[in-house]
Length: 201
Image (tube, rainbow, N blue to C red; front, top):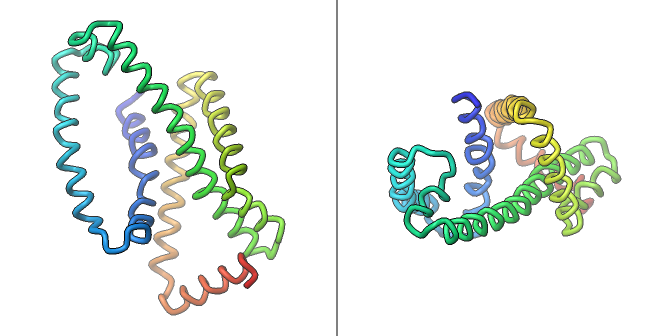
């Protein structure tokens, strides 16, 4: 993996997945201080980042947390702690990535297509992706596709990652162009008409 591929991986996993927090948090926590929360989290995370930098420099071996913890607690404890954390992380990520794909990906896609084309079937499919069943099925299929890509070889994963970053950047630029070229007055009318087309009320 090249440094560019590593950069793309980090952008895809952290940089462009979680900005929805900045849109979600003010509505979920009215009156909350989002900027102060981000700064507080940064202050707490910086020492953790430094620890990993120092440990990686002091113990430049593959294995990450297992290497660090096995030197302190021994191999058995390190394996148990790291493996349990890995399993919990993977299970959590399968659920989170499935929810993100279903609720923030497919649901808006098909609701938008349904509203634009006047197709009740498309709108219904978009609503289905917000249900528990839709999210669970999407999560399982998402995990299956990810496993197939990884099994097919790391080069294919890197290629897929490149396609994803190009698609993500194109979508992001398109969104910025639409937002900057649209006027606030007409935007509200379009949002109202979209809501009417989606909900029918």
